[in-house]
Amino acid sequence: MRRFMFSVAPACVCTAIAFCQSAVTTGPSPSAMRSDEVAIKQIEDDFLKAERTTDPAVLERILADDYVGVGTNGPTPGKPELVKNWQTHAGQVPPYKVEESDMHIVVRDDTAVAAYTKTYTANENGNIAHQDSTDIFARVHGAWRLTISRYTFCQK
Image 1: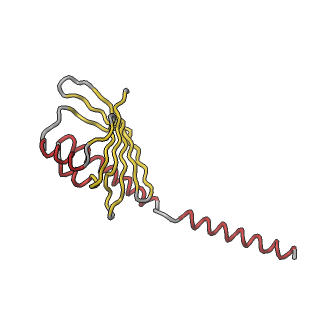
Image 2: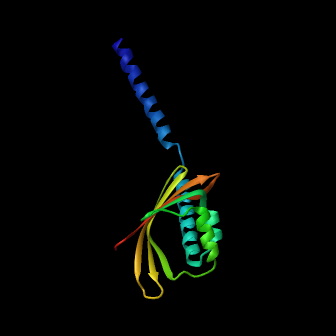
Image 3: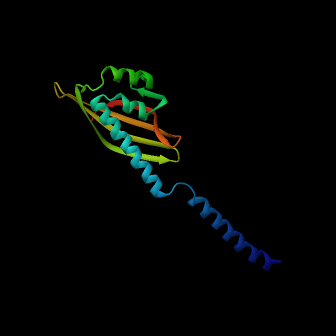
């Protein structure tokens, strides 16, 4: 009887290890995750370029229909209000320059987070403001959409 237990135990352990290894290796491949990171970075670059030129078509494409913004003082306008505001000023260069830095992107399945700093420099007097930003994306019908933005202005 003892001999049987010792011969069965290694087989169970080997089966458990094989099962765990196959469970760990499922999910998106590293190249697919990297591809998603590149896609999110491109969306962020497009959004920044649109902000520099006030291009509402980019908002239409990037923002989810149920987009929610959260700013320093609470909720910000949703997608319909943002698009309408940008349409009013379409093509106008804003009174500031904006740059992005220190971006970090994390992708998990159909959710992605981009955290970074935006630096605004006023054209008129050179005053600088820094914005700590976090954007949350969801993959909707195969395409990434910005669903939630959170930002606060900070000292640097």
